[in-house]
Length: 424
Ligand code: V47
Image 1: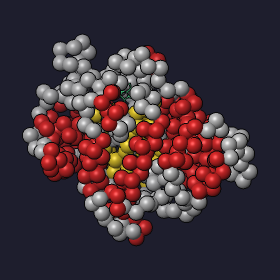
Image 2 (image 1 turned 45 degrees about the vertical axis):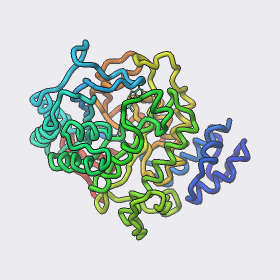
Image 3 (image 1 turned 60 degrees about the horizontal axis):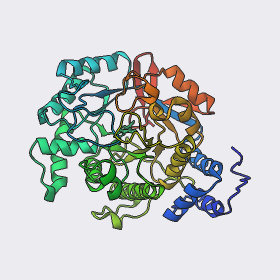
């Protein structure tokens, strides 16, 4: 890094005021975001994001021991960026039966995993009970393992197959679905399916999928029900940087609303309209991070996902470059001043890149994963496992102390496959 906190050597004078305001914990504007995206001094952007992540998390970086499970790749949608989905009868199509799902849960326990990350396609042939039975079966065999399951897109699909979906009262249908999933064992929502919140991008790349309003509504209802959730941004296909900044702006306003609803730091102003939510930043000196023991119902992590063209209908596009990946992560860390965490998902970034991202704003590289079917980097198979030792080494080499976390970012104390959460 060319600059330090004490003596920044910024080559772009436009970064000076941005730097001052970011370090003072002030919210950056979309115009600031444009500068962060357009400046040639990309290292100063990364260094500033690093200063902010260091204020939030000191010298620690997180990883977790988890297992991904894709229950079915049959999907009614045909998103252009997706190489995962199959139609019924296609080669490679699959749907896991309950006994296979139980076996997956047993393997998670055997591995000492703290989390199962469960997502799948919008399978039109499965009944609603398949999903509640799946969660119950997993809780039977793996009661201690946190079930982070179903993207917002799946939640809306479940409302449709349960025949409770009403456009006019869609939040009530989402609530109906989520309440039943929670009762069956759901504990948080992953951040997938957000893509880029923009109508043009939606029309060009994932027409047919729910739009941003519905995605955001599902997360809002989940927050109201006391679930923590994550948010992704799948970038580097037909989207522009401007549209990514809009995506970030929308997410931070939704988080303002979520934190206000929790009465965060005494700002007890629950509001139905996101436009009325007060701006709440977590990046100022001494700002308090949300504590899952006391409060749940907010976005935990922003996860920028670089587009992988291989095997998708957008294969002709080049996908983002390494520098764009670093910059996008750094810009997301700086713009999303009320997101406690920024994750560099090593599977999609590669472990080497994820390691570099730890110095550009990320504080988390995700986990051991084991099987991953959504993207297969460089022609790899779905078996994309890394060892705890590799994750720890990558983190140490990047200059941080590796800390194992659970899904809610609480520290985990481990003895082999036995583990317990250390509460603050
Ligand atoms: O929803 C699909 C994206 C997401 C491609 O919440 C693609 O902790 C790149 O959401 N190139 C799934 N991306 C991954 C995801 C995730 C991963 C790790 C942790 C968490 C979390 C969430 O992957 C999909 C979609 O947005 N995706 N196709 C592609 N060709």
